[in-house]
Amino acid sequence: MLLVVSAKTGILLVNLGTPESADPQAVGRYLSEFLMDPWVMDIPLPFRYLLVRGLIVPKRSVASAELYSKVWDREHGSPLLYYSREFENRLQLELGSSYEVGLAMRYGNPSVTSVLSAWKSKGLDHIVLLPLYPQYSTAATKSSLEWASQELERVLPEVSFDVISEFYSDPGFLKAWEEVGKASLKNFDYDLLVFSFHGLPARQLKKLRPCGQVCLSSQSCCDAITDLNANCYRAQCFATARSIASRLGVDPEGYRVAFQSRMSGTPWIRPYTDELYETLAQEGIKKIAVFCPSFVADCLETLEEVAIRGKKQFLDCGGEELRLIPSLNTHPAWVDAVAQMVIGRVGRQIPGAPQSLHPIQ
Image 1 (spheres, rainbow, N blue to C red):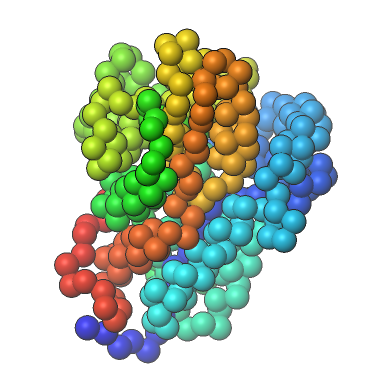
Image 2: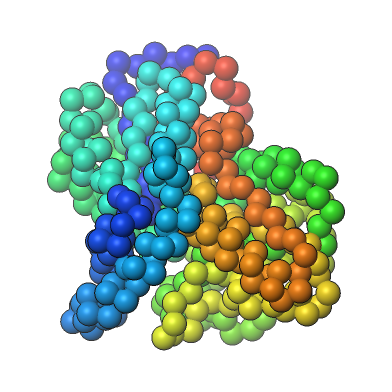
């Protein structure tokens, strides 16, 4: 049933961001904006400024630009931006004219401010903020929501808004990974699945309440979601892996969970993906398939860090094959999943949509 409305609901999709090019200067600007965010680099401003502007950006701009150049598409540019734009277009088609879908990046372009400014003439009566991070973290989710909320109140103060802050347990999200996984694993005689999530400094988890009471206090602290760890990024990552593995018919001995993309200087959440590659090779594991379910679109962290650098490391240690399972990107099941999240939250029906909608966490 189609509910006819005169106004529109805006769906603001927010992802982390990407440099405008693989040029060191563009990468440097992106790194500076990203790392100067106090939710990302949670140290006092004077020390953050000296560390980021004086050490990290000058040192990493050229090296990071070389990494970006390995995955930069000559025609489409940044894979993250390309897949996100395609997803935006397909979600718009799926939702129809009662909705206005917009993609913004927390850092870089298209900016949250530019999207909201373009929406001034759209006649929106409500907006749903959807950060595209399945698991909640202060560094990504909270930062994006705070910035988007601030700009919403400044640019469109008359429009109400709602938030979907995480969706790691959403049935549609899990179904999409199941479909992508089954298609990618077909005819691949793997020995083990690896679920590799983006890492975070351990201190960021310990600051959470009430998670900080038990965080990282034992090997089993993330074995189940409880009232204490319900908003814990690491616990949500383990829950995501358990759910996807179960849907694929893989028992707990058939997969491992690890965390990638760490920086030096402070302890990050363990186990580390790069160390796991070496451990698995030493254990005689020859063929692995790697899922990266903290990303909904392929990007530097999947295409270069896992499919290129990770694969080389695993093979150098004695492994025979590492297969990256593609991210959700523009898969129809993923488009449908987000459409149903939005419909379930807003309560507006579109043609052909099921009457029974799953709840939003």
